[in-house]
Structure formats: C-alpha cells, structure tokens
Amino acid sequence: MDQLPRNAISSQRPFVFPRWANSLRMALVIIVIVLPSYLIFVAAYGASPSTTDVGYQPQQPLPYSHAMHPGKLGMDCRYCHNTVETSWQASIPPTQVCMNCHHAILADSPKVLPVKESYASGMPIEWVRVHDLPGFVYFDHHAHVRRNVGCVSCHQRIDRMEQVYQAEVLSMRWCLDCHRNPEPKLRPQEYITSMTWSAGSEQAALGHRLRVENNINPSTDCSTCHR
Image (tube, rainbow, N blue to C red; front, side):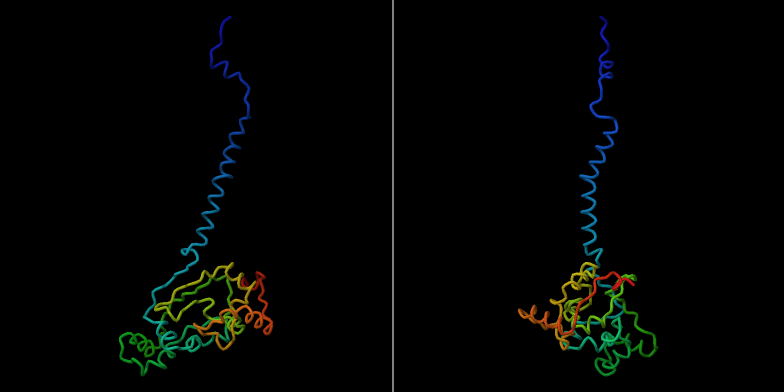
C-alpha cells in the first residue's frame, strides 16, 4: 500500500479546539495580565503627587513668608484673608492690606519695593493661587470655618512654610472622608486659625460634643460640591 505523505496525515487529524479558541486565549491574556496591570497603573498615577498636585509650589511675583507673618509674628490668617468667614472664597489680600504695616515697617526694604510700586500705580500684585480646585468643584470656605473646621485641617502648617505649597491631596475621596467623619477635624471656634492648638487625647470627646452642639452633619450628595 502506498503511504501518504506525513504532512497529509497531519492535515487530516481533527482539531482538539476550534480555531476561534486562539482568539479566546488572547482575550484571557488581556483579562488576566494586561487589565490588572493597567488598573494598577491608573490607581498609582491617580494617587501620585504629579496628579494630585501635592507639593505644588508656584513661583510668586515677590517673596512673602508665611513662616514669618503667621509663624514668627503670629498674625491671624483672617487679617489678610478677611472674607474667609463671610464668603465662599478666602480673598487674596489687596496691596492696601500689605501697606497697612509696610508703610512704616521695613518700608525701605528691596523686598517691599514691588508692594509700594503696586500701591502707587493701583495695579494689583498678580499672586498665583496655590490651592486651585477644578472649575467643576465648589468649595465654601465660610461654611467650613464657621462650622469648627480649622485652617490647618486643609492647609497644614502654613506657619512653617517659607513659601506656601499644597500639602494635602484635595481629592474627592479626601473630602468625603472628612464629611463622613468630621469629628477628628472639629475644634473650638476661638482656635479656628491657630496652627499649634491640639485637643490631644480629648479630641474624640470634643469633636463629638461640637458636632452635636452645632448640628454638624455634612452632606455627601454629589450636588454639594458639583453644582
């Protein structure tokens, strides 16, 4: 009997798996290896400082030391940011506020010269906003400050910063964590702007008392911050 060529015999063997199984194998590789790797990358990138802007420290038009003013000199935050208790935004101080002191204090310092020029010309100093939330996010400063949330809770120890930088992630999850459990952040109203005050071991009891007394129940509805 004539023997068939080996390749002819091989071609007549039935397939164990249908041809479309090759595509299924590729899909399994994507699901098992590629997709988890992608999700891990997205999560890591989303939490990285380059995305959250933690550490963001823009160059300002002139040197202003928070470590000196609220830090060493003990100036109250509300002297410069004087709308923080009455408005949704903490105002950037006009030049007049700076000149209230510097018309006499260090008036001849080269560091103060741009302030004097701004005051003389009427042109405002173009400060660069550090804590700049996206346009689709609404944050009300006075709603927080008047409900026992201190400046340090969001801005950290600004009194130690020679040049201000963003110290917190300011992410949606970060905000929601506080809205769901505000008690660790609550403090007496007289210490709202204090950078050094701490309730220590009494914080849990104090926070609970302040929450009950002031009926503090922050909303977690989307429309609270996205209007």
